[in-house]
Each structure stands twice: as C-alpha cells, then as structure tokens.
Image (cartoon, rainbow, N blue to C red; front, side, top):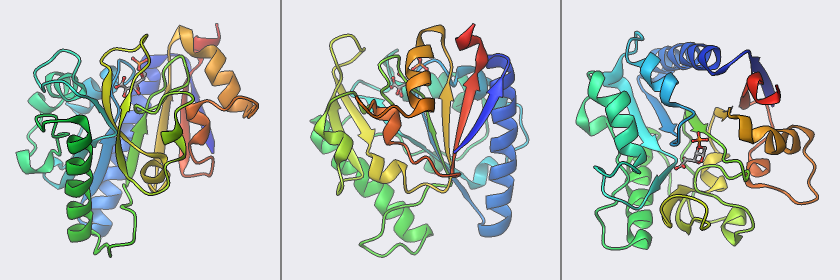
Length: 241
Ligand code: 6PG
C-alpha cells in the first residue's frame, strides 16, 4: 500500500487528477480504453471539477459508481447527480460510456442485480471475461466516512465478508443519508488493478489512524481494502492538524 501525503485537499485533488490523466492515457494506449469507478460524498468534488479541464480522451473512458443511494438520479442525494453537475455535464463523453446505477428499478435488490449484470456484460465484452472471473477495473476510487465505511459498506454488516456477489444492496445506519444503498463488494473492489482511497476531512483522523496502524481489534470497513501496492492512500494532512 502506498501512502501519498498532501498539505490539503486542493493539492490532493490536483495531484490525483494528474494520476488519473496519466493512468487513463496509459490504459488507452495499451488496450484502447480505461474503466473507472467513482466514489460519492464531498471528498471527490474538487477532483471532479479539475478533471473537467484535463486532457482526457473521454470517448475511451467508461465510468461507473462504486456506490449509489437508492434515490432518483435527479435527487440531491444522488452520487450520479453530484458527478453530473460537477463533471459529466462539462465534458464531452458518450452517454453509452456512463453506467448509471439503475435506481429506477422497483427494489434495491433488483437494482443491485441489474447493475451487476450490466457490469459483467461490459467486462465480458471488453475483457473477454469468462463466467467465473471477476471484472478488473483499471481504477476504483473510494472515500471513507467518519465511521470508517467506504462505498456503502458500513461497520459491522455481514456484507463486509461477501465472497460471491459483486454488487449488493445495503442499509445505511440511521446517522447516514438515505437508508437504501447499492454498493460494490470488497470482492469487486479488491479485484481492481488500482484503488485510490481518498482520506480527507477533520472528522476522519480517528479512522485514518486505525486504518494506517491497521489495528484489527475492531476492524472498520476501510481495513478490508487490499493493502498491496495496488492501493494508494491519498491523505489530506490537514486532517491531523
Ligand atoms: C456515499 C459515498 C461514501 C463516501 C463517504 C465519505 O455515497 O456517501 O460514496 O462512501 O465516500 O461517506 O463521504 P465524504 O467524502 O462526504 O466525507
């Protein structure tokens, strides 16, 4: 696991945008496309804004979401809406490259299974994936809540150990917005070639310390993230002030 420390969120966001530009260019050069799964919340907002003016061949970039709230895509709590308002509405990317979580399905369970099917269909076509293999994203971006959750994988839920499914529906704790969530599992997250964990926010010091020291007495969800060199922890050092 690589830990990259930044003075503040502005510098973290600018440098992360550079990482993504270079990674996308490399993937597009070697295999013709780049797959990225975005995170929600507030941490990536500055980064998404910077990406609107970066030189990326969006025609060859495929965008997914590591988690989504089970609300309409026009709802202010929607991660898709946040991404559309800041990034997608400002770049020239084909609609068919954007894999919106199908929250218009009747239930969260159906949404999760439909999203898993669309992701498997995409990777089967692009990655010549055979049926038993897990899709390999070029980059999965993750944030973390001050309870140590990531994507919509919250503390003390059995789904943290999900070994079969790629996409599940979860219930958020009463302190989080929107009860019903759709989330990548760690089976899918940890299959990625690259994982970026953005850690920023004055209320995240405690979980950041536990994650970095890897105190596994009472594991928090971010401690289920693969700790090999495929994972880069992007640390906003203002958190420790
Ligand atoms: C969500 C996010 C979630 C987020 C963390 C951190 O849907 O809420 O995907 O996992 O990354 O809650 O949120 P902040 O960046 O707002 O602290």
